[in-house]
Amino acid sequence: MDNTPLAWRERAQLWLRLGLRGALALGGLALVIWVGLPLLSLLSPFVLALVLAWLLNPAVRWLQQKTNLSRKLISMVVVILVFAVIVGVLFCLGWMAVDQVRSLFANQQSLLDELMDGAARVVNSVQSWLAGLGNLVPRGVLTSGEDLTDALLDWVQGLDISGWLAEMAGQAPSMVTSVSGFAVALVVFMMASYFITGDYPRLRFELTDRVPMVARDFCRSVKDIFISAFGGYIKSQLILSLGVFLILAVGFFFMGQPYGLLLAFGLAVLDFIPIIGAGTVMVPWAVIDMVLAQYGEAAALMAVWGVIVLFRRFAEPKILGDQTGLSPILSLVGIYMGMKLGGVLGMVVGPLLLLVCINLAKLGIFRPVLDDLSLAAADISAILRSGRKPDEKKGA
Figure (cartoon, rainbow, N blue to C red):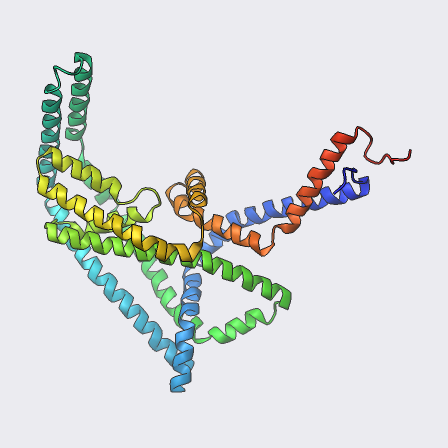
């Protein structure tokens, strides 16, 4: 490209294109935030039913070819079986979780006393350890350490667990309302799953037949990108989190932990969040056990955490690497930007959105914008270097 500035007509067209593209991008973003997301939340049972119908369509089509039965009949049987399996698994897990929660509330006073006693023992151990350093550390440092441990003990003793439980009990009516709304949405989701699965070929034809071929090919490419990014990443993370949950549940079972299922579920959720992981709880827990001279439990916790680390070390590259292809530095960028923009949820969604943008860029969607930006930069550079008016001819 030469260093000749663009003519005013070309420059006007260039900046008009950039302005229109910027306005369309901002308008699309505002439409997604203020219209798309609320609409998606409103129609979430039907959207989830459409996703389930898309997942079940290959199985329903195969059964229809093998049995020559009505698609609606096969769809009903398949949907009922799927929901029966899901409800059965959730019922078993929920029953165990409710039993442990009920036991937790029934023994809240003893647990609170045990927590206070454990905190006091930790503080006393730390104070004894600091006292043993009296000949090595200046007195001012020891005084600060003792003040810190006393403040920690006062904070633990001042915890109002009963008030927190009473506040949760006061929110019971709103929780009942939420559960009722969830039950209605669940029924709508189940009915919509049957209707959409039964009519999936016709609905798909009605939708795609009215779309031009060029737009259809473009939408298919974008759909493949989103499925590859979101589906692959979420599926791999769910598999890893399920593996971590099973390791924790088995480890807590052999440790004799009375609330092992709840702890395993909570730590598996933490492990799903990038950077945080189960070690943020298990390692301090093991350190506290060592301070309290409970070396067996500390060793068991570190052993379970070690198994989790080894599992992630060997399984994550195989499960996650082929699904996304996102480099570690780009994953870190996506996690950090997502955390800044959306908190904990943004940490999970950030790498996905970054991966989608990268794949869309590879598809060539942003190529015209990049070409116009490059042309605008070259034009500005040429104007600054020439020292002449943009339309001035070389021979004038």
